[in-house]
Length: 548
Image (tube, helix red, strand yellow):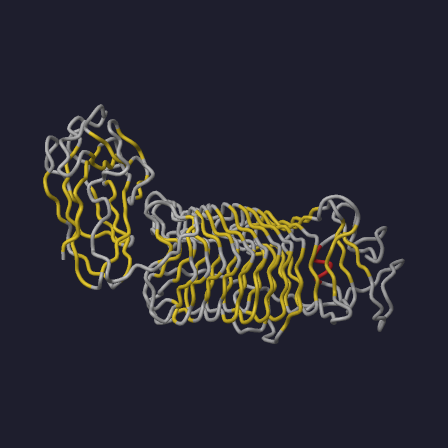
């Protein structure tokens, strides 16, 4: 499903005026370019001070906006102090490779804190070169945290952001904003983010490196990487993100229109999918990514699939992307809309000339390691956690359900919610039951001795290989007589509802149900039946088959 991350800002250009000296200050004489330290303290400073010593610090962030700085200068904020003002620093910092400008902290205690409860950005830093921004905490805020922008339409870069914490903001914590590849040579390292939309976002740039960063409980995900040429994201962690409701979906790492980017030695886990939203995956190849590699990563316990290659229906397909030497475990968990795969291609041609190789998969029952892909994609060396080789489904497989009568596992008596050891995946209050000593008391099973049940808004699903064409799903159904009629089931094929709700006709015997026709391309399809009624009503299902 397409999604757009709107990373647009209204930048305010502030005029630059050199602060006039006042009697008794230590303002440098004109023409003095010797590197200097400028100190700020919100608790003990004054903007009439020289700012040149800890005993004579400036007070406000706006005082920096009115200053002029040379290569090698440092702007140092007092540890433990807090600023609650929005600020814009435009064309203030032009360092050199040997003498970068540094924005950092001084003294002992917690990192200095910047927050703003109004305005779109806490701190905007425009048109900077050879800048180090470090040891700062940013947030809470009403919009973005710290934004590195370009307003003069010239290339800017060699910016390092490190040891920065961003928190409690509805938009990105650290954002490099540009649409013309003017950002270059960006390094973001040892930064953390929690309860922000995402820790880091970039809308365009060249040579972007993100390392040793950690995002937790972010509203959307950890990282949004858009229009980057040549970059790497390594040794990062994204945990328990996707806390917000995004109708177009959310993911741990979003990739769009990148070329030559590498994600390695990174862990993405517990990404959430709210309600019936799509996605919820660890990594989303959204569109037009070329030569992007994911290697040596650990992707686990995500509500959606681990990796999705998306067809945005505008012909901007991914090409030459590689997933290799990664570990996958316990993904595709979402109750309402599982995808049923660890790696999912929404269309066959979503990664032309790519490769899926030498990965290890710890698969949940009913979850496959990979959908069928375009023949140009190399799939090799993949294995299950026990070492069993994993192969793609092929057209020679019959279009049938495994365990169509729900005889595994054999219960003997009673019932079991979400049983293991079966080809089916049960979500919520769904499972299998016998008519022997079972509180559900179903009618006699039309096939074998057990039936499936769907109680309330639960579901059951299975992945089936289908050749290109049109199909229907047929099965036998009854409702739980003690709860009365009213529980129907809806058929979803690859997450899309097909036809009208199907209602069992009787509470005392099974009768046939047949879905509306649906059309698919060749590949593995997720066939899912969801309960239509959220209350305590139950449908019994058995004897599934596919008809063409």
